[in-house]
Length: 170
Image (cartoon, rainbow, N blue to C red):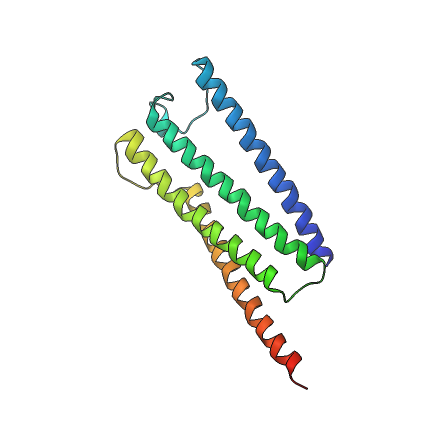
């Protein structure tokens, strides 16, 4: 139980930091749009020649923001499941559903972010290709973690069914 409580606190801090960074990023982006000023932004080398004020850039930035929000939502569901686990409620459908939703969201975030990076290269740079770097490898890992949570959810669901059968047996 102590480990679940520590994990829940860690997830709370992570959600807070991710939410804060999202708010700061949105604030800075609106400032750049409103001021139309030249601000030095540390962008990856391949995007140095991209116009920050084109509609293509806005579409890509909004889609990445949606992915970021989905990641925070996945962490929220994971936190909800860990909170219930820390209370000693092991075999409930609520926990199984929390981990299933979290897993699905992590898989969606991992795979669609790789797709969005591919799409950003296609739209902004007019080239087709996927660069294999640490970010894409990390996104594959996020998808694998999502699949693990989905597997864990199925194991919990099977445990719930076995517990119900066991409770009915005299």
